[in-house]
Length: 152
Image 1: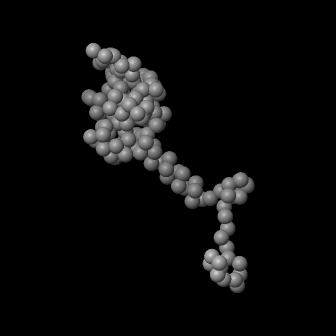
Image 2: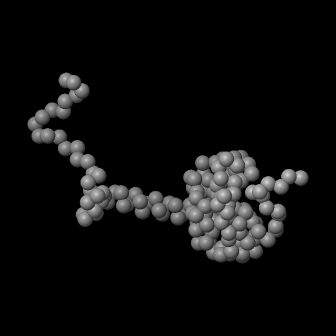
Image 3: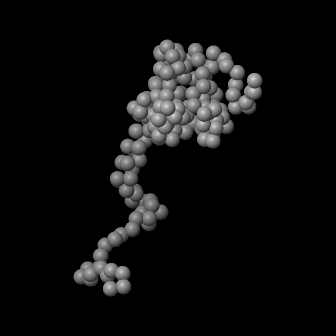
């Protein structure tokens, strides 16, 4: 039997959580394991680790170089969690429950960040922020002149 460098021997005390499990751009058959309401587009390993920590999971190890066996070209990374810690922190009975609680936290955090970014953009640059204010272009027409079309 061939042993890959990415794979680790099965250890029931540990649970692997891949970032692709939370990718809303993937279908269930392509590898997403949580519902759309608990997934985000292109999740990063840091975001998944943050969500796991926010759920209450403290014993985890980031494996940034790992690739999922069915998606070796992506190099997505994984979290290796302590099974006992993850199950007790999320008060669930299975890996699916752990992933769903991590996914829901990840989804809500991403949604909040997007709303904050939208508010920041809607407000525009602050009064003293010359660099960002300089990027704003004014498209005011000169008074009384018609806008010329190309070559006319």
